[in-house]
Image (cartoon, rainbow, N blue to C red; front, side, top):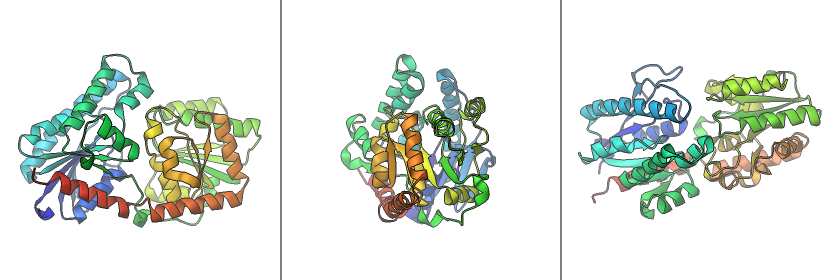
Length: 397
């Protein structure tokens, strides 16, 4: 089939585009391959337009009601689902898309896919998060809502024509738990696009007078381990008496106000900088200046089998890193990181200090990470699997 005649609608709920990098990479790759791509996503700071076209990609945005707690999330997702369905109808009238490509969370978008399958539309499920495990990490796994989350995942897999997994663990889950045929599950990792990695000369001002800079880049939710990281910072400052280290925590999320409160209560203010979300050029400056990166995601059923984008981003900039010893974290970084005992902030702090105290080790680990990105873990390699997944979805069956 000639891709120039194939329209695609991508729905992503948790991030506005083009801010959501993985989904934007996918949309751009499909556009380059000749597909006509439309994207439905939420509005966000800096992305308030309801309709615009960027790089040939048509973007439709809806308002998002952010909430917390199990029932708050239920309302948020219900509101988003209705908004996305209305926009999908609008896109279908304009483009008659042949593929509906939905990313999670949440696992409710199969309901939209079911409707469009009546018109012969193929459904690609792009599996970003293990929602049953995520729900368990946040709220525990008892009760009706947890069972509904598990049911939604099963029905999503049953509806999918093709599934995209972000790593080997997710592929195994798609086959074992989702019941999808192995030949219809494709691994497309969330890898950096080396064309967009722009190292800069270090900016000493970002260290704010300290000798070393440690950077965290990512989301700040209850499952991301920032509370553990602050315990590690406290150990480094108080128990190890190391006042020569600056910590930059880059990103945003529901836990940010609480984390600021914890840092203030612990008296860490002069050594911890919460930057919020920052432009790409500023992020590149932090990653180019950092002596090392950290990924404090604790071990739980979700994190252990999930690929953390920040790990690959640190490697792309040649930064060594400290992470907790998780299955997919080790598969990503291999010998380009130091590994702390899971969920032990003191051991995590000691691994940070080991890197800080050895310039040679920092350089060695950084070089190993950059080499892995150049040879194995970059978007030029992964996009081939994405295009193969689309070709399979569009096969006559």
